[in-house]
Length: 123
Length: 144
Image (cartoon, rainbow over all chains, first blue to last red):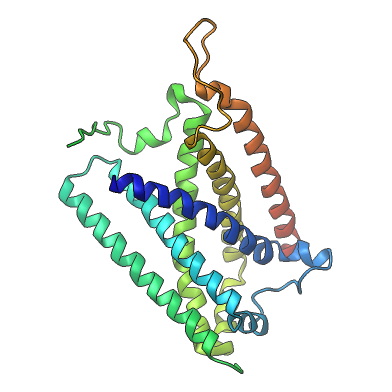
């Protein structure tokens, strides 16, 4: 039951990632093409743009949402790969625990950065 | 407790298509691209964390990632994402039992879900290829 619930969340997170990461990839990694057709400035990693985006609530919220869903989806996927190697129950629990702790730590760090930058003004 | 079967082939079991053909290779590639995207994602969290050091630190970090080596790496991540995302949509549809036809009595000539699913698989892969070509065009403009 627990595994089916996790699998359900894995699929649900994939749909959220598809939308958010699709937008992220489109705007940040197709920037030259978009610039050619008159959308955007052409360099999304320019510091003025980066810090301007960081101070927008929508950006912060979607960043944290993508961070959480991305970490869950990716680390659960990695856990599934490990679990297919017919490991012992103890090792499976250890891997599950390590990945959960790593996921939470990365989420806390990423969210901390996003919230702190959102609160900072005039950078 | 549920009994699990041993994974006799280990890593080779993931990479060999065997009689499962295309679907199996898509499965192996889905995992490979997933692992690549995850590695990049974790690195990306720390790189975006550099914003805390202010614009100067951000710009010096971006100067490192502006090299050709990282640009090529980033392009590969975009290609991996294009495949992983499109194949992922296909997997969700199959998981939910959509677009694979209804189950029927096994009568000759035999039909099975992966065979019925093949046109859908091809359509999705063509779509992934189109996305890859578009990102390739963007990469070309970056290099130019």
